[in-house]
Image 1 (cartoon, each protein chain N blue to C red):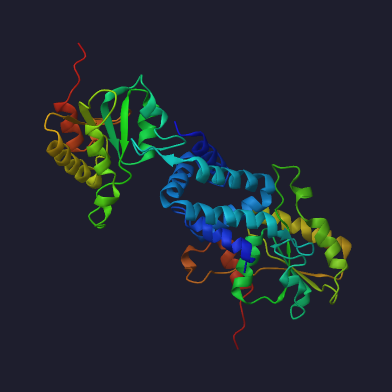
Image 2: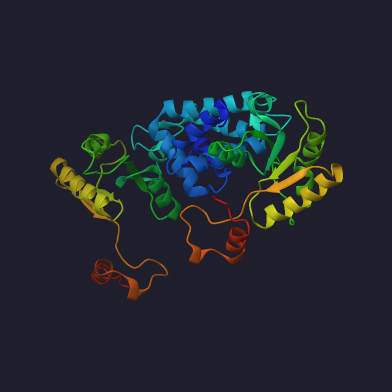
Length: 203
Length: 203
């Protein structure tokens, strides 16, 4: 029912994650109502994205430069690598301000339903990375994947692979415990058990 | 934490209706992962939208031509106008295949919290439209707005305005009744009352 150019844009928007027909229609008519400036901004930002964003060849984060600013930064701890599934996870950890080491972005996780998921992940690059880094040798690899089935499977797989390359390497995981504002009575047994076992000494 | 070009695109996506930081991030990283082809398609579709879509100067629907194909079609009933709030409503009514008249898109509704909503709506164009149409004079105006407060207020306002311009004009509204698959026991009193009053004779 819509004109061809409206239909094309609806089709293009529908490819975005969790955008269906209705949402895509709302996006298009919002843009049509708001006028050329907003459409121009979006077009420009998309063009800029293709033109400037590349993958950092060291950590596989997306960045305007390769190596990215984090990998280039001599003030960061080049002996520790934090492995994350996606660039968004990296951004969340950076946001805490608690981590000063390097990162490695896997760009995916082990997916039992997708035979290619193992080859799609940047695992080879991680294993090579653990051996040839410039500023200091890697001493610790933090596996910071989600504590769900895909994440746990991926971490087990990485542990095995990392150990086969370098037996000396220290492999750690994020602590499991009660989240801020959490309630003891609603915590599951695994979380609470882990929180007791790994309790923090305060003096 | 993200590179400037990623941040710019996140900002541009966040202007779309009901898109927050997280959703915008997911859109951007989805595009980065899927590669240049998908970004290119979206950029092209947006460019096409600016370049080709215009407002039909007769019915104020968005279209690649003005007048739009519906207003130009001599086979349609040019004596009936169906007034809708938005282009999406027009598409839904066209989708039923039950209507062969013309449309008028208000591009908004009466909003008591927005003093400018009255001037933003294409009401003047409707009133003028009811007087100067080429193929046949307007005999009926169907007010097809949503049966909610904004829609009812707008319809009351339009009724008054239309009657003040043309006393002879027939003004109708969409039937109120049970929706397909609806349940008598869960229908509200106004809907059920209206469904009984306007019951359909079947023989």
